[in-house]
Every structure is written in C-alpha cells, then in structure tokens.
Amino acid sequence: MIAFDKNLTRFEGMTSISALIKAYSLPDHREIVKVIYDKNKKSSNYSRIKFLEIKSAELGFDLESADGEYIDSLADGNTHGGFIALCKKRDYPALTEVELKPDGIYFVLEGVEDPFNFGYTVRSLYAAGVDGIILPPRNWMDATATVCRSSAGCTELIRTYVSDLTPTVAMMKALGYKIICANITDSVSLYTADLKAPAVFIIGGEKRGISRALLELADLNVRIDYAVDFKGSLPTASAASLMAFEAAKVNKKFDI
Image (cartoon, rainbow, N blue to C red; front, side, top):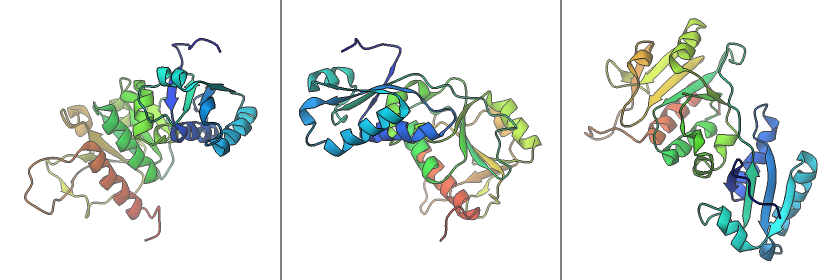
C-alpha cells in the first residue's frame, strides 16, 4: 500500500464517489487516482465493489482494499461507510461568452462563508436544473471534501466557473442576460418578478450580502415574501432554493 499523497483530495462515502464517477461526463471533471474500500465489509458491500471494479477498469483508477482502521485514519468524519476516494485537484474554468447558453440560468454565489451552507446551496441549485454557478477566485471549493458531502456530491456534477465577478456579470449583462439580485432595497416579490431566461441570479453571504459593484449592475432586485412578520433573512441555502425552483417553474424546466 502506497503512502497517502497529501496533494490528493479525499472524498468519503459512496454518494460522493458515485458523483465523482458520474462527473467524468463533464469536460472539467476531477480525476480519481484511487478508491479504497474496507476489506472487512466486502460481503455487505458486494454490489458497490463490483460497480467500482467495472468503473476502475473503464476510467483507469486504482481500486484497493484496506483495513477499516486505515480508512478511518484518512477520513475526516465517520460517514464514509468503508469507502474513500483519493483524487487530483479540479481546475475550474472562467466563464466566457463561448461557454454561455443563450437561454441559460446561472447563479453567482458571493461571500458564502460556511462550507456546509455552500454545499447545501449547491445541492438545491443542481436539483433545480441551474446551468452553472459562478464563484469568485477565493471560494469554499478549497474545502472540497466537506462541500461534496454536504451537497450529496452535487458540487462535482454542476458546471462551476471561477471568475472575477464584476467583469463577468457585466459581460453577461451586455449579452442580454437579466441581472437579478436577492436584495430587499427597491425590490419586487420573487413570485411576481420577470424571471425569464437568460438570467443570472446573484446571492450574497449572510454576513456581507452582495457587493456594491454587483448591485449596481442589477436589472432587478427581488425579495422573498414571508407568511409572518419576520425581519430576518433566510439562510443562503434556503433563499437559493426558493429562487432557483421559482426560476425553473417560470422557465418550464419541469412539468407542474
């Protein structure tokens, strides 16, 4: 057994590993170097291991068995279920005009500081069929294993771009994208707003909100109306979920 390479990123559990394998269909997928499984759980994980044997031969990663104690030593948590993947770092492209879908729905996430909140947010955006997320150069994808677990693997499946936000959003605006900010000032209700694609939705972190430079590019500010008199704000993941699924409904991404 080779020593663990600290330059590799660890992913825990079959949910994350299955997402990594599915992501091989994307042009900017992360390369799996090795998957390690608990040899003492081979009988109970027979079907999962057979799946990994097939995929390791198809995709070219190593598959290795080890004692549970070794897997525990690699894991950050205790939810790995006897499976650990070691992967190379993923390169995130900048969003360019060539990449943009003419009728796309994209989300900018600015200043989301908690990796779990970030992961929950991305899970909802992926489920709502968002065409991509745009992140600033400094973002929580550095905490890859944590955000992958909290997103149920969706951070590996959603198209992700890392760009300087202001020029990127300005470029999208010039190309006819509607810029929609989650911001209470001069806002209209999310449920009456024009959310037709192409559109980019901008959501800020709970502490700092959206930067002034991005707010100045907005075509529309939207708010989420509450059922009671509540002066607080929703968690980023909740706000993003409501906005993404409302946009999906308006743009007929699913039948209702």
